[in-house]
Amino acid sequence: MASLRSSSPALAPTGQDRLAHIDHARQSILYGDRSPGGTPLPLESWIERSWRRCLGNGYRPEHEPLFDMVAAPALRHTLESNRALVLAARPVLDALGRAIANTRYFAILTNQHGVVVDVNGPIDRRDRRADLITRIGTDLSEQRVGTTAISAALTELQPVWLHRGEHFFNTTSVYSCAGAPLFGPDGRCVGMLDLTGIEAAERPELKHLVMQSARSVENALMLSLAHQLVIRLNWPGRALGDEADGLVCVDADGRVTGANQTARQLVPQLATAFAPGLHCNDLFALPYELLFDAARRHAASLGGPMEIPLWTGLRLHALPLLRGQSCPQAPLHRALPVTTPRPLKELETELIRQAVDDARGNVMKAARTLGISRATVYRKLGNKNTR
Image (cartoon, rainbow, N blue to C red; front, side):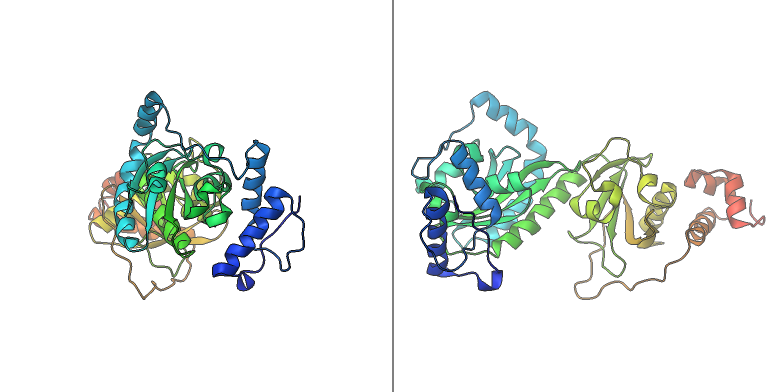
C-alpha cells in the first residue's frame, strides 16, 4: 500500500479541497488505489498508523463500529476508580461547555482505556450519533470505534485534531474532534479530554483549547493529592501564578508526591514516570527545608518568588506555597524581572539570616524551624551575636 505523509501546513488544503484530499488518502491507503492523485496529501503519520492497525484487526471502512457499553460491574469499578479524575475535571468541563456553546461541539472525558466517564456541552440526545458516544460507560477505544481523536490521543500520547474522513469507519466520518491526553501526578496517562462536533465546521483551533483545558485538569488532579508544600516553577522572567506553571508537590519530609507535565519538562529528574522515594534534594541544589521556610515567609507576607538552582547549573523561578495557601494572580502583561543569579551559599545564608530575624535572634528556635543544627546556623552566619 502507498504511504502518505503530511505536507507543509502552509500548503495544506482547506474546505472542500481538504475533504477531497482526505478521500484520496482513504482510497489509497484503505483500498489500495494507487491511481495518480496529484499533490501530496495532508495526512498525519499517526492517522495512517491507526488506519493500518484497524486494517490489521480485520476491520473495513464500510463495517459498522461497535459503540458498546462496558458491563455493569466493570462500569461501577471504572467510575469508582476514576472518581478523582471526574471531580478534578468537572469545573473545567463546565467552563468548556460555556466556551463551545455556540459551535455544535461538546466535551467528552474518558479514562485511560477510552471509556466515557463524563460529558458536557450542547449534546443533542435526539441525534443518535451524539447519544451513542456520550453515554457514560461507552467504550470509545480504537478496538471498538477505530480511528478517533480519543483513540489517537491515548495511543500517541499527544494532542490531535481529526476531521471527518480521517476517522477510519465511514459511519464515524461525520465527526470532527480535538483530543489531548491527561497525565496523572505520577506521569502516567490517566485518560483524555475530547471536543467533538457532528457535521460541524472544521475548527482546528479547538486543539489548542483542549490542550489548555487538559493542563487545568492535570493541575487540579495533582493538587487534590495529600501534600504539605507545592512548588510553582517557571523560567526566570516568567510570571508565576497560572496554569502554565510547573507544579511539584512534596510531603512534610520533602518527598515528592507528584508533578505536572510542565515540571517534568523543567526538571530533568522528573522527566520519566514518577519513581517512589524521589526527594526534593534530588531535584534542587539547596536544602529542602529552605523551601518550607520560604513558604512560611510568604504566608506571613514577608517573602515572594525566589530563584532556586538545579543540579544542572540552571536556575528556575519558584514560589513555594504551603498546602491551602493561595497563589497571587500572575500579571497579565508584565513578566517578573529577571534577578541576577547568586551563589547557592549566599542564598542559603540569606534564608538562614531571615529565619533568625523571624525568631528575634533566637538561634535555637530558628534552627528548629529550618530543621538544621544550632551549630550549622552559627557556622553559616559566622555571627556569635545571637542567642
